[in-house]
Image (cartoon, rainbow, N blue to C red; front, side, top):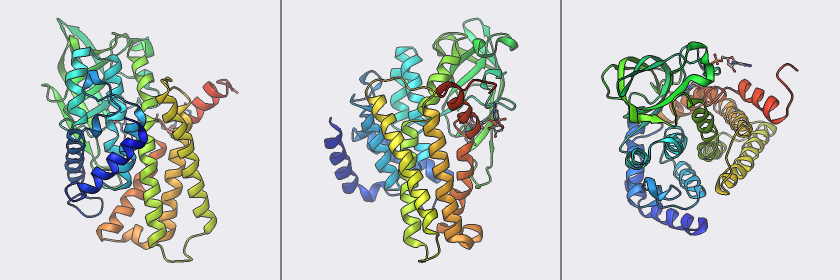
Length: 376
Ligand SMILES: Cc1cc2nc3c(=O)[nH]c(=O)nc-3n(C[C@H](O)[C@H](O)[C@H](O)COP(=O)(O)OP(=O)(O)OC[C@H]3O[C@@H](n4cnc5c(N)ncnc54)[C@H](O)[C@@H]3O)c2cc1C
């Protein structure tokens, strides 16, 4: 289906089903409520065919360009039907499954993710291993036809809801760095996995510590090749910085407009409003080009670090404006609307950390895009 026709079909369908799609909670809701809402919207849009558009037929999709997925997430977010961070997880993890999992596994699993029947999580970071991912220590050793895993992950978003995890493990020697990493697709109900949610400063238990004690994973759950998991991680991270961020910009745009609607006239510095608007549109222009490059079949890489820096800067500038404009409500307001602004303001501080910190993105831009060299 062409993008124009898809947009019309989606918009009409959303209008028609507005009453059933709308969240049952006010404000930001609890994370449990958001997850229930996410599952509902994914199931309904999948069954209507829209969620399947833009994904390959071999994993239950209906084919077509990734631009269709970009639009669906954009409009669901713009209508406040889903929270973009949790909605966009398939954009991060499904392409990895499609590219690297055994064909039958991808065909069986991806539809469950797209229909909201399953949640998946991304087990990369560890205590002491974030930016320097190549130092990860969570160990996988061969045990007959299986892999036996011991170690810990941290900051694993939504692990307490997840049925599966794309897990990076150390299969080489501790010194093997990026050469001795293997990616595994792990069932989260396997014996020996303990998940402990961590509360963030915005009051949600969104990410978790995950412990692996002698967890057995079947040998056919290796993604790609043994000891070659680094290339999977490097291929996955640009996805985290492409369509998912396009969806996020749609949410930022909506919140900026809502702020301008409610803030008393004369409260905001017009220059600050102009700056936030300009940053947001600069990001959208950049991300639009990224979506088009994906649609043209290009492989994304280090240049998506620019997208990440731009969106994180825009997000924090928008929510700085929220704090300036709504002051006391953001700081101490106790109604659902104020609680939502406050939670979002606090969460915006994480934008320069998750998906690769701003400093590390700037290093990548300097070294890999501008060729400025490691020591200059
Ligand atoms: C909301 C949220 C959700 C997340 N979800 C997940 C998830 O689902 N799965 C997952 O695996 N991880 C997740 N993470 C973890 C995230 O990927 C890491 O926090 C991030 O990569 C940074 O790693 P770190 O926290 O270990 O910080 P560190 O790498 O220890 O960095 C600490 C500070 O030092 C700076 N720094 C580090 N190295 C350099 C350098 N070479 N040059 C200049 N500055 C440097 C960093 O920019 C940062 O300011 C999440 C994080 C957040 C905040």
